Amino acid sequence: MHSFKRMPELHILVACTVGCYLFLEIFVVSNPLESLFGLSGVDLIFISFFISFLIAIISVIAGVGGGVIFTPIMLAFTSIDTLIIRSTGLVVAMFSGLIASGPFMRKGLADIKLVFLGAVPILFGGFVGSLSAITLSEHFGATGDALVRLFLGVILGLIAMIFIVGGASTEYPEHPKKSPLATRLKLRHMYWEDTLQKPIRYDVHNIKTAVFLLAAVGFTGGFFGLGGGWAVVPVLNLVMSVPLKVSAATSGVLLAMGNSAAI
Image (cartoon, rainbow, N blue to C red; front, top):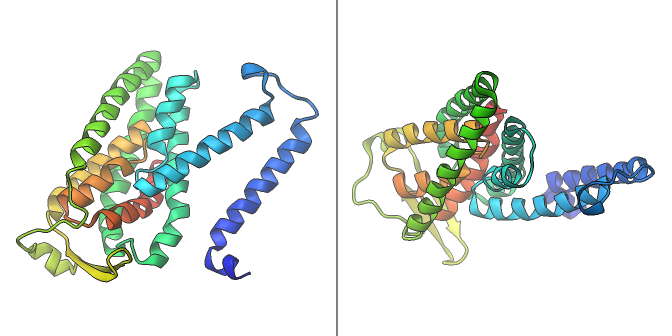
């Protein structure tokens, strides 16, 4: 009962998941559908569950959203329509951020002011990106799918470069000057760092540049079904000088809000 009060969303999610699998076991196993490698439909569902479970763990820890892992895998190894895969990738990213939002907020790691600031451009960009994806699919058909796969490969290459270059970023960025706009908006925050056993204070910088970049991230995430968390963390950490741990937590909350518009 105590654990349920602390994390009710986790218990509800587990109960719903178990109920769904019991339903599938009862009503699907009686008429098994032979498919890949001779596995039944239920077997494939269980395998996909464990793969998705690993994707969720990795994506939440990194703050990148599950879509950045789910979408490329599905596009590479399945023949499902790209628009369906990209829209499903947005759902995966949204729920991974949604489930992680509760613990992040209770722990005080997610900066709620940054969430409100970043949600507007990400919502707008994600909505425009999803509309563009639908328009491309309707008017260009197979050619549009080929272009999406090509540009997605380029985007994934850029993501790899961002994380390689981002490895040099400091966990606690320091900026010599304070931002007047951040001061007026009172974008200053503090959180308790368990590893150092002391509070960490930080100021936000380069707000105008970050808003433009977040809108571009929202468009890219909505168009390709990647969610956008892969770029939100570098924007918060490298551009706005937000500590890395806060950037990852805030990115998770932004994913839950931003992807809803694209979906």
